[in-house]
Image (cartoon, rainbow, N blue to C red; front, top):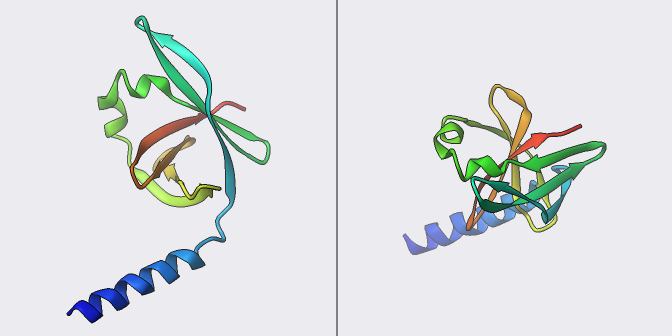
Length: 110
């Protein structure tokens, strides 16, 4: 049983290494800040080619709105292997997430 799990683990590592063909987005953490109801929130930038996405700080204030949004397929990644997903039914938003990194929603700005 342990050998089977080990083989499965090795297969998953190799398979995930083969999926590096996704576009690489540039993430700029803490690029700006915004004040909502007297509290400051960091704004992150996500860039790919000529598109700029800004993180949605109100995600912290109104999480119920964002919990209804569903992830689509993975469309990219960052240099530090955070995953980028499309949002089903919303062409203006992306989601950034990773291991030990919560889902962060970004909105297209240009």
